[in-house]
Image 1 (cartoon, helix red, strand yellow):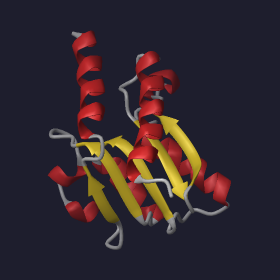
Image 2 (spheres, rainbow, N blue to C red):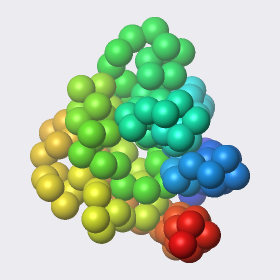
Image 3 (cartoon, helix red, strand yellow):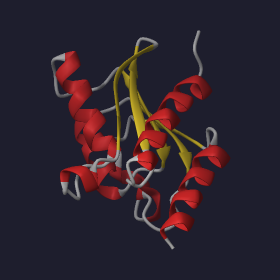
Length: 144
């Protein structure tokens, strides 16, 4: 059985793709029945779209693969805590579980309210947090 670290490493691979493309390095995968059904990373620069966060991209992809808008039996693995916009989308998608790596002290949804996610969504924080945070720090130090 694959575990949270395995799937977070898959999300980290996506984050590295974003990093290499000069996007904020956030990666995400959605898993159903121990199988990755969708993967993506931030595409805001490439698409010139402020809503093209990794989570938004992967929710759309998973819904297309699974053939429905609700992700009630799915887990999102994302390298950084979702922002309020993404948390709202995850609420509407009724995702069962969110697993994230690094906390986002400035823009994370939990800074505003933990009620942005669906009430039944289970959250696991801090999986490979140091690796996820280090990639973000490297990206922003490169920008300065």
